[in-house]
Length: 232
Image 1 (cartoon, rainbow, N blue to C red):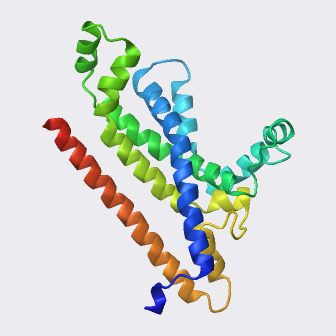
Image 2: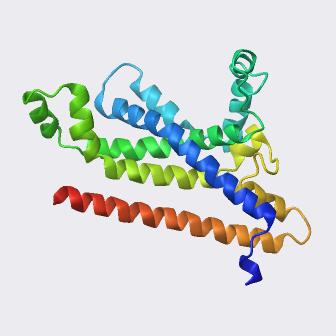
Image 3: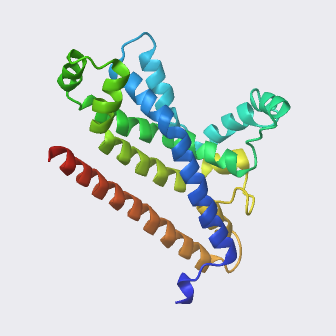
């Protein structure tokens, strides 16, 4: 039973990971839904470029993404310097930066899930609502959004799981600081680098797998229940 007893460092990393992942998903969700709607419903010059930029973190090495974030949003970065000077906001080397890095890395998965769900919506239902006098905003919130809830749920869970496992961009952008930026993957990496840390590393590995599997199972259950309710 001692194997499953987390140390103070491991508990700290777990709490921080859950906190960072929750904020990453919450911050990215409105932008993800908006971006998915734009890509699914609108045609405009540069759409392919926007699509490529949204999905770029999937193909770039995470370290490159983290380094770009550091150049742009670091305290001396292009935007980071202005944020620090005028608003006192700092992203680099704290949990807010870790959440931002996780949000950027998980954003493509969120957008893709919502976009696929939007593309599967029957446009005739939206047209029928408009003929009954509903405006575009009301149609979106009363017809379109409820129909894409399964895709939103899937996107949220995928983004959360991806945020929970984020490593490369996080360690590059905010380093590996215990209690501030040391999430589960970073704590696991640290344990593999010190003598006698094998047991702790294995414990965190098992914990990460269990949390990710639980998230995926919950996503499937929620999506099925909502789909069944919509059919009913």
